[in-house]
Structures are given as structure tokens and as C-alpha cells.
Length: 237
Length: 381
Image (cartoon, rainbow over all chains, first blue to last red; front, side):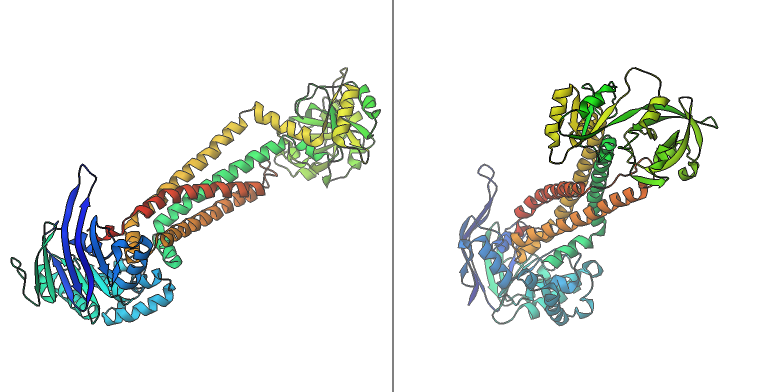
């Protein structure tokens, strides 16, 4: 089953005179139960595509379906609810709230959906335990290392058991060993039957964790391969 | 999301304190200056407000405020008494005199001569002595603050019995009363009207005011108009005369402008500090708000968070500022300079409205940024 289906996605930024086209007729399907990596050089449009597929950016053309919902035809308010309940986010810069503890940060998706912070934090604590962050659940982000902060971000992305987890360069700010640990956790905890994980990266050290790798260049998909084989021109570390 | 908003606000203690300080500063400055201004303006009318027995004040037509005296002939008293609807009419002398103590101290005093028979216009609250003190030959009664000005190093109450001179005539301090302080800070010296006539230099006319009580059921305003029409004098109800005195100082002096500038400065500085700090606080959290939006927080939820943060800052700042102003007036209550000054409830309400406006300005500037923040901002490194 496909978690995400994108058809003929076009995206351009700027006004008439200075319009920059960044995506050209992109077609993509992301299957549930798989970890799909979107790879390519900087500026090729992979983060823009991720933003569109997760419903945070509206494309200038084309159609996107997430878990059977055509988000390109949805109102903003409907997209917010879809994101809140069915999508988990992991960002390159973690984007944890500095005044909240690890457990409270991990609970944010539940809190946004109306659960009281205290109750949600208790639920998030259980998820943090599974990620080996139990002893750090009451620490503030500034008391955590980069790897630990990214684990909190993973907990925040999966605490509400979404159908789709999108990750933007999850290992970009981490050293090789921490990046490896984070990817293993991401593969184990975030992945699973019925859940799709879409990772944008240009870190070739983590390609081996992918079930499928989609390569992009200049706003177009130029390669697509599965289970350990890389698209032509790409090299694993 | 309320708990999250509060944690975000309180977690950044430096900014939180700067925000609260901005609002508190504006509140303190505005409420304190406006209250002092109201206190000062009230002082201009205190001598009218203190004489509660009189419904109407009658004076020469050229008089513009209570400290401006244009003497009338004594016959004016009889003419006022003859007007239909007057219950009683009593003379009042008001003028300046030189008070000289036996050890050579000289003070200019505001001499108030009150009706010998009724003692209308006498102080109501006595700290030493009583009304009989005024009936004694040569008896003079000072207000407490005035006595403190004459004898700054002594307890005014111990000065009862002190012999002195006014305009070279012997007087004896027979009482100390608690009177509302006047705008011009001369000691108030109460004597009987006949005593005032004897103490002041001879001149053709000496009657400063005629105090009138209307008969039961008489409309004071209508009676004042009737007195004016029949006597050719100026007759004003006590409240309109008090207000006229206040208006004189409002329109003829630079006091309102000076206080207005300070209050405006309080508003501008408070608004600038608060709006700028709040704006910066929101801008610095914009990425976090973007992340919340991406995760699934609605614009409404984030607006609620910003409003809650603003409300907390506003209430804390307002409370601290008002507390500071109240403390100020409590501390200065005993001194002569700001005696009787206080925080009127209208100032509390008015300052609250202004603080609300400051917070509103701050929030509006910040909210437009929050509304426009694209959740996709979090995907840009």
C-alpha cells in the first residue's frame, strides 16, 4: 500500500519576473512499511519535495495524496489535523523547545491534539525509554548532546503513532557513530508495519539503512533503486 | 498549549524580566505622575472642599479662583442674607499676613477669618484643642503641616500656648487642626472674623467671601443664580467654584503640560521597551512556532499562546508597577510635600487601560509574524 502518492508535482518560487522552478513534474510513491530515502546534491529540490509531501508547503502544480487524503485539495485547517495525527516530523536542527524537558518536547504532537501536557509527557516518557532516553527524560535540551536531542526528536515524531514519518537530514549535525545509532533507532522505532518513513539526506554513510533510495537532481527524479542497490552514480560510504 | 506557552515565557528569564520591567516601569510612571497631578489639582480647591457646610460661595465678580481675593464691602453680607431661599450667610476673610514668633522667626501665613458666631469654615479635625480655641481672645489655630513649616524641628502639638505676633499684634496659638493642605504651601492660620479684621491693616473693604447655606428644598444652583441677579456679586455652588479653581491652574499654569510630558514619556518608553522586547521574544521563537505549526498546532492555538504570554507579562508588570506606586504613596504619606496624595481608583483603571493598549500594540506586531510563519521554515537548515 502506498502511504504517499505524488503526481506531476511542480514547484516554483518567486514572482512572475523572477520565478525559479525547483521541481518539474515529479511523480513519486512512498510505500508503507518501508524506509525511503530521497537523496541528491544540495539544491536539487529534495527538501522542497519533502515539505510538499508532508503538507507544509503547497505545490504550484500537481496532486499529493497522503494515506488516501488528497492534501493538495484540502483546506489548511484540514491539513493541520492530518499532520497532527498521521505524520511525524524529524528536523535537521531538532527544533526542540528550549524551555521544555525532553519528555515534554517529545509530547508536543499529543499536546497540540489537546492532551494535557502532564499526561502527554508521561506517554512520551515511555517512548523515550524505548529509545534509551529514560534517564534523560527530565533534562532540558541544552543539557543533552546532539545525538540525544535527535532521539528526543524521534520520540516526538512517533509518540502519536503516525502513519508517515518524514525526516530532514536527520544525521547532518551528528558524527558518524551517533548518526549510525540514530539511524538504527529510526529504522527500528520509526519503521514498522504500516508506517512509511521518508528520509531526505545527502549523507551517503546512511544509505545502507534504506529499503529504497530515490535520487534527485535539478528538480527531477533521476534514479530509483531498492534493497541495497544504489541508483546509478551514487556511492555508499 | 497553555502550559507550553507559560514554560516558553518563564524559561527565558532575562527576556521575561525585561518585559515585566517595561510594563512595570510604564505603569509606575504613569500612575504615580497622574496621581500626583490629581493630588496637586485637588489642592487648588481644598479650601473650598474643606468647608462642607456652605452650599454657595459668594464673591466679587472678578475672582477667578479661591486664592484670588477681591475684597467686598461688609454690606454685601446683608444683601446676600436678604435673598429668598438663603438659610444663613456667614463672612469669610482670606488673606496673607506676617507671623512672627518671640524668637524672631518670621513666616508668611494664609490668614482665614471665620464667622464669630457660627464658626462656619473652622477645621473639623482637631489634634490639639477644639472649637473653643478659636473663641479665646487672640486665639489662633494652625493646620498641622503649616505648624511643621513654622517649627520644623519641634512637634507641632507642643506649640499650643506659644505667644507670637501677627502684623505686630499679639496672638496665642490655642489649637492645632488637621486641614487639607492648600496648593500654595503657606501655613493656614484660623482666627475669628473679628480677630482677622483687627489683625489686618485697615482698608475700606475686607470681606473676601460670603458662605451661604440654602434652605431645605432649595436648589443650590438656582439660588446662586438668584443671589448673583439680586446682588450683582458672583455666586457659585461649592462644586463649581472648586472646579473653577482647578480649571484656573489647569489653563493658566504649565503644570498640566509638564505632567503630561512625563506621563507621555512613561507611555512611550514603556510601550517601546515592551513592544520591542515582546517582538524580539516572538521573533526568536519563530522557528519554534514554525515547528509547532508543522507538528500540527493551529494558528489559533499559537495565537492563544502568544496572548497568554502577553497577558501574563501585562498582569505581572501592571501589578508590580501599581504596587510600586502604592508603596510610594504609602511612604510619602507622612511628609508635608505629598500629604493627602493617594492613588485614585480611576488612575488604577485608566492605567490598566493604557497598559492593555501597550500589550495590544506589542501583540499585534508580533502576531502578524507568527501568522505568516511558514511551517516549512523548519525544513530550511
